[in-house]
Length: 101
Image (tube, rainbow, N blue to C red):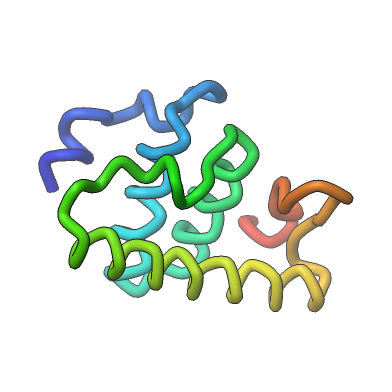
């Protein structure tokens, strides 16, 4: 995908735009890579993402993106309940390092 070529290794930057992280999350989810999808989703939330900031003009695409992000959020919360990721009082933060080893 062009976005992977454009962003490249910069995706690892701690201050990466939360919208870019959300898009990566959606793309990874579509590829069936739930671990990466949740990882990018949690980083997007940590960096201030919310659905109103998605920045997609096409309503059909936006609706699909919001639905997918909702599915990713459900996965992340179920993993939190299983102890695979951490949750604080405000929002989901990070995965346990053990999960990615």
